[in-house]
Length: 179
Ligand SMILES: CC(C)(COP(=O)(O)OP(=O)(O)OC[C@H]1O[C@@H](n2cnc3c(N)ncnc32)[C@H](O)[C@@H]1OP(=O)(O)O)[C@@H](O)C(=O)NCCC(=O)NCCS
Image 1 (cartoon, rainbow, N blue to C red):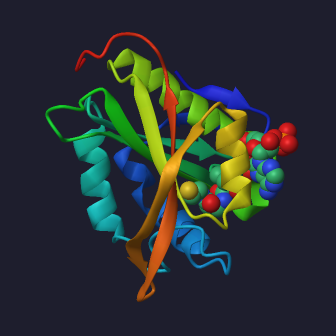
Image 2 (tube, rainbow, N blue to C red):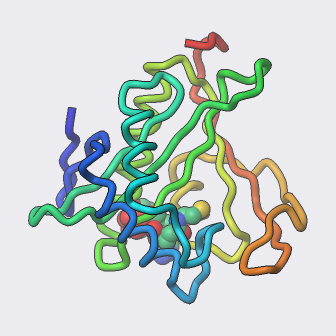
Image 3 (cartoon, rainbow, N blue to C red):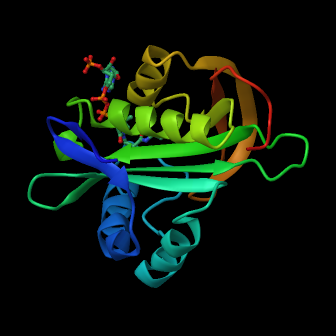
């Protein structure tokens, strides 16, 4: 069910959102803050559409969008269950909000939607990676109860450089069933 916050409506993504989501991701990825793992390159709208079709009713992945009153997509959250057979209760997520719509509760609402979905499909731990310099994102995650689990040093390549990431996670409680 769509969840309203003042700035946007939160709902599951549909294949028709592909172009808007690609535009959002490319814009956020190109910000000088270098918040995302990817730089200004992102998958094509056609690939995005295929991905959205695949995850639409999957118990293993979900994409949520934040849609502003005019129909513009101003936020996105992707969450996917861990593929390892010993950790089907864990899912990894990534979130972004358009600069124009930050500090209005959109990020928080997307994270809440992910936590609801996770509980429904038997996921009891949500984890994420965040760059140490991304203080806004870390503040959001801490506010929602995510804990720092460690620092992965030189773990990713971004723009040709090895970069560190902080691992943060939230235990949702409940059983460790695969859902
Ligand atoms: C991180 C991000 C998703 C936060 O989204 P948002 O919609 O602005 O977050 P919210 O408005 O829901 O903020 C909820 C709370 O998080 C904290 N927070 C969010 N942004 C913050 C900031 N810039 N500075 C300090 N605290 C911040 C605050 O506690 C805030 O509550 P408040 O506004 O009542 O003080 C957004 O800044 C973003 O998309 N950044 C670029 C992409 C990115 O970094 N993605 C995460 C990669 S790991």
